[in-house]
Image 1 (spheres, rainbow, N blue to C red):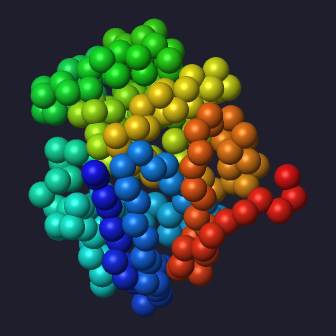
Image 2: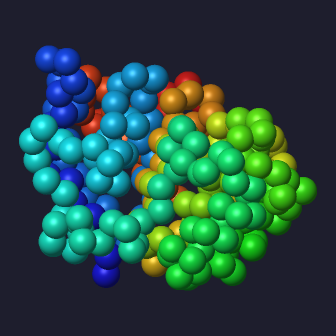
Length: 219
């Protein structure tokens, strides 16, 4: 059973505490949404889990051990910023990373390419794509190693309705046997995902540096 633990995570930027004692535990087949306004630290928290940012205090455990040894092999990450090579085509990027990750998730990648409508830009350089199409390419990259830990920062932003619905179906089909954590900033978007995603998921609100339980009040 896969288990991720965040233990007393604090992060300070420029003398200001962005995260203040974050504690939570999530296990295999659980889906967690971290909701909060822009600038509250959602991306920072995701990057800390991914090992891209070091917490000021606290630690992260993966199955009771330091997560450092697991990250590259078992996690897939989608960030706001493009992390593909802009001078390469979408196909060249995916081929490169599939070799790096030994192609463990190629069957899932084929399905995502189809679901997101990415095939028509398969030969296009990433640097020439619009934000929405770069987002699709980065989503595919995040699944290349068939990750046990899936970290998605604002995954639905920039997707048209068809791609959004298709991506939700993929998430609903593959959430078992992995941990999925995604972020959302907009309350209306959160409600839409809550309504459309055909699996149960837990929502936590990041506010004042801490995670709080969240319930819809006016929808």
